[in-house]
Length: 254
Image 1: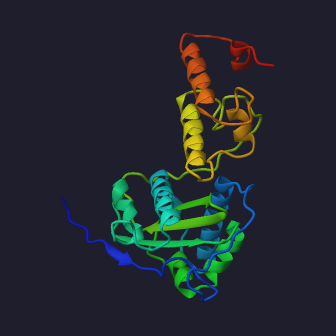
Image 2: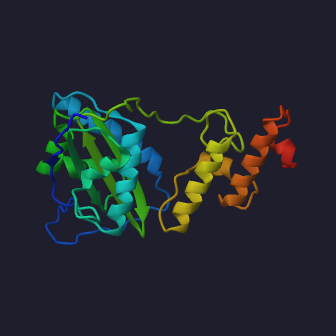
């Protein structure tokens, strides 16, 4: 196997524009749509790169998963070092991302992608990371935890096999049970509900927002729980027997 030396591209831990150690801002973020804000940030990253004459970055599913794992570390201990003492960008190793050069931006205290990117771009070190011409791939994650919004940007020159870009889900006519809006009701929808429920139970923001939440609340209790996921799995099994009833008909829902 060809050995690739991982070249660290280091940042200051987070973005502390006030110059005060431990700076944080509590913001009203109960309505923040983390998925939407993530895609907004991805677009603004590429806009900033275009204005600087750098090529656009591709956000892949694996890079996004790595950023999501990294942001959970950041919420527990805000640092550019991981719990094992290594640099934050090395989270990509855990996901078998085959990079040579990696970098990271992380921050908290800004409630929207616009505000966060404005802060990043007004910080020389963070801006340099965003417009660095060596990058080809990016992963972004945003979450709300204990009244603060946290952000992570991961950058890599290479990623290996996973080069397919993620795309923002579009919702046309909501259908109960079709949580991810792909036109199907299956185990993927149940998994999203369980992930959403687990994150909320751990004090993090959920992964479902707006119409996704409505489509996930099958039992009508205004929550997304294992009960809703179980209903989806039961209905999915019914469809596997060539069942023709709609989900509402199957469960007798109005």
